[in-house]
Image (tube, rainbow, N blue to C red; front, side, top):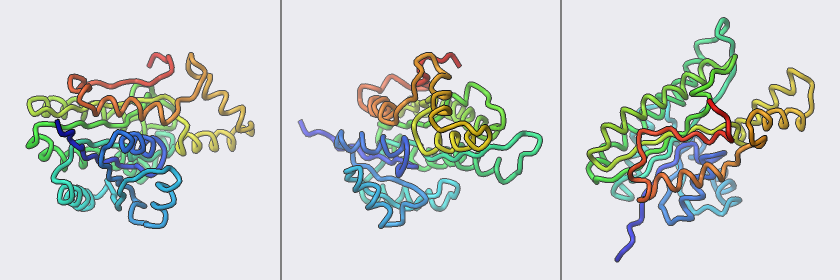
Length: 257
């Protein structure tokens, strides 16, 4: 029996959890195309993917722009005939108190984290439903469940992913398309480094102290690794994950959010 080679799109796949997921899917024999704002920088792409030993394509993608999304997905479909898997890992983060929250800071996070995910799903759904098979994974956050001071836009954008995912799950269910979100606690990524650097600047504490504080925020007293998220994503997009949909899987190291 000939094994089907699945085609995947991973947004935000040149760093953090997106990069780890792309690497894991390639290992499973999936044909992966990475979309990122710097995906059109051939030198940067070669450096990043080469260092990771990842055989994947990458192209410029701005999930804030519907035309960019349409071009990106059309190119993948033209090359591979369809899209089987979509992992929405593109995301941004910036702090601001509600009482002094610039519109631009709010708009960028909502537009990237939530609306960008919507645009990607909208673009791939027709191809998945026509094929009768599809897997969509959205990278949310425990911030979708637990508010964080000075993070209104980030929390709102991640909470919105949960509602979006439920609707997509219902619409995709008759066509073999699933939609699941993953909500991690602190993961050792570039975004976590932003949090740590901000805390260092505000408190004067050392990086080691701040990291220990983040790790101590959950019962396991540890930070989650991107590879742990990648393993979960690989299962959810496999044939074995067909009955898991309309779920938010928290990778919370024991925290009750």
